[in-house]
Length: 559
Image (cartoon, rainbow, N blue to C red; front, side, top):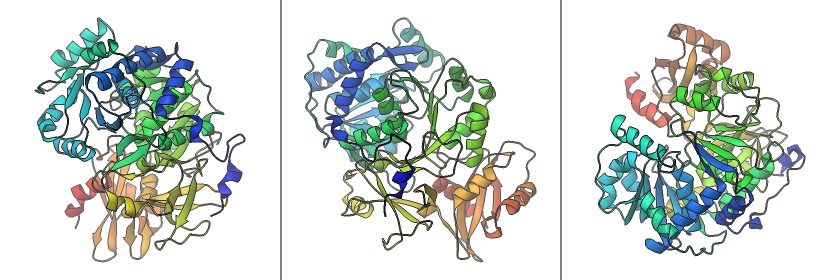
């Protein structure tokens, strides 16, 4: 396919990027901390770390990892923390030490944690004390040799650290009992590292930086092998795309999505480091009243989130009264942004919600809308610089403009493969370097890409292809609906039937009212045959609706 999207690029956006501008993520980090040394880098619960603090702490921790623990370049280290100040310290220290980072969801069950640690071969882990009880259940069944434990307030300074840690542990009782022999406290590790000399580890762009595990929402979780080249390329792609809207050293970024997830890892952790932004770390974004209280204290200019997060904030009392005068850039990804949510966000904040698209396997960004679009378009945007996309049929033939097919992607941000899953790598990556995304998409004559739905989620209704994304968006636009998830179930008459699981925003909504609304806004075969009202919908750690769990919960109950 010709790169017709290049004609739609905003002025000043180049066709390509060159990752060789940096030798590694570590090189980028070191240049940024030198450039922005005196500026605040991270804020959490009212406590700040400057770029200079982050440089010093990561150097000490990296010295501990390499000098005291004797970890070698290429060893895997797991990080099991939510958004606290220790996360970026652990992240950049591990990278400075030449280690491969394995990000771990702290809400994992013991089974999930054991699987990921064993699959990755991690030999060390740093874990927030609140979640150490899960690690304690499985650590003896893994290759983990070193456990570093930290508490929420450890980097707040005395006496705040003492007070916060005491309240969390003894008053709120948020730390379940655990026993992990020979575990080291982060304070002790940093003190030891401060007495050691750190020797810079030589790295290049082809070294592995992350084993970033997929969510496992469509099968077994797999570790995407992401190199320094993958990550630096995607970071530079995002940088040249958004630089016209932002100023280095002046931005404040709200970091509510978990940094252990690929979206926030690049769009928040690495992007903020590149531009010298202050990142406001939101440890528990699901506590929406507290979240809004934090936002009230900030003049934030960058907001990265997903549809369910934006929707929940818009329904949180007090959000509409915040000061949005500094907000320059709102980025939505991770799942489809719904028109009703985007339009309400624009109405409340005055800022356009810019939709983007990506995957764990692409570090993650593939497409993004121009930063100067005046309103939501329904498109996931244009392919980023140095990125090729193609719409293909099941037999791999390229589709014409406007036709739907599977989205294929090629570019420097595409992973090397799946760690220890060669069969899955061969199914996902072609010999020519194209990645099968598993998403149904189309491209218009201007090069804008539109996601229709996941191939695996498509519902076949009496010979018609029905896409849950579309139905969910229509139902969510009803003023009495908070959110909705749509699945297909077996049906003897039509092959499959459409089922909508709906969370009410207004308890006066009934099934009849919703059915009338659906038939008014969708052709008959798309309208749900079954409507189920629920209190909540199952979601991933970042808030993406889990259709697989909806099928498990409700599929067998529908006759």
